[in-house]
Image (tube, rainbow, N blue to C red):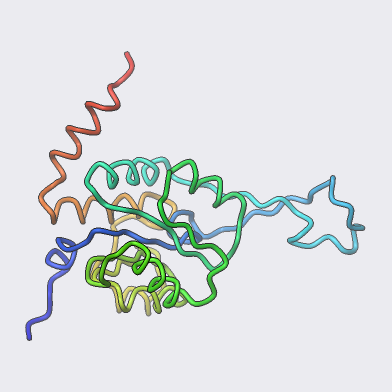
Length: 196
C-alpha cells in the first residue's frame, strides 16, 4: 500500500492537538520567587515560585484561523501550569489536558471525546515525550527545532521553531491542503477589520 503524503494526511484532519513547552513556547521555563509564599527561603522551590511563559501572537491567530476553517483544537502537556490554563482560556481551546504523563493515552482520550478517528487528528510536538501522541496521529508535525528523533517520525516539519510561529505553520499547512486557506483568510479579515 502506498505511503500517504503529508498533504494527503492533512486533508483528513478535523482535530489539531499540540504540546505546549517547545511548541506553543520556545521551551524555556521562567520562575520568579513568590514573596508572598509562606515557605522559608531554604524551602523555596518551583512550588514557591511564579511561573511565566512567552507565547507568539502568530500562534494565537492560528487558533482563530483553525476555528474559522472548522478545525477543533486542544493541547496535551505533561506539566500543569496556571499560565497555560490562562492561555488556553484566552484561545478558547476546546480540549485542555494538563499533567498528562502518558500523551499516547491522553491523545486517545481526547479523540474519543471529540468523536474523531486517529486518522482525523493531528499532533504537533518537539520532544520524545510527544512521540506516543504523534505515532497514532493521522498527521504528525514536528517543529523546526524539535529533537532529531521527533523530526524523523514526523510527517511534516514546520519552517518556524516552537514559540516562534510553528503552530501557525501547522494550521496553514492543514488549511491549504484542505483547500480552505483563501476562504478562511477572507472570513477572518471580514470578522476582524483593520482599525484605521
